[in-house]
Image (tube, rainbow, N blue to C red; front, side):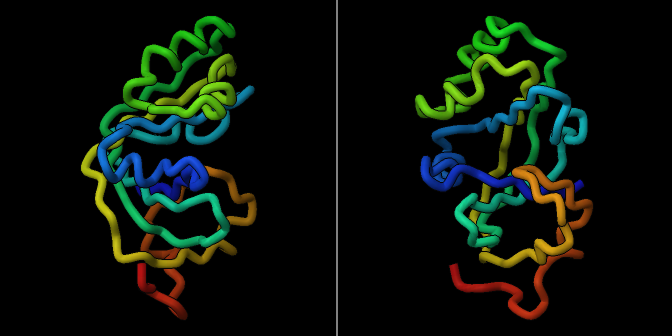
Length: 149
């Protein structure tokens, strides 16, 4: 299964993954939102920065998946702290995620930079920061195709 995952451009999240400084991404929810229960080991993650470029620049393979049950604030905080060596969250992201009721921690391996390409985002009307795409090839914009990085 292919997924399109938005990363924090301001904090250089994609670069941190590509350079091996971080090996895990995190998502939170007050309820059971994406990707909770919808991502599996071996799935392919296509990464896009959250700066309105709509350009896929890298991909990685899901190595590990942890989707929590409902956590207390303390349990949530401890989970983030315990994984901070892999998450490498700056303070602003740490504060955003620690304490949430549901966490999804996704270990990523085999990161690689791609020849950048655009995705037809009109196919995803309820755009989220995590999109289950099925097969990424069905969403590549044919009018632009691969673009210079």
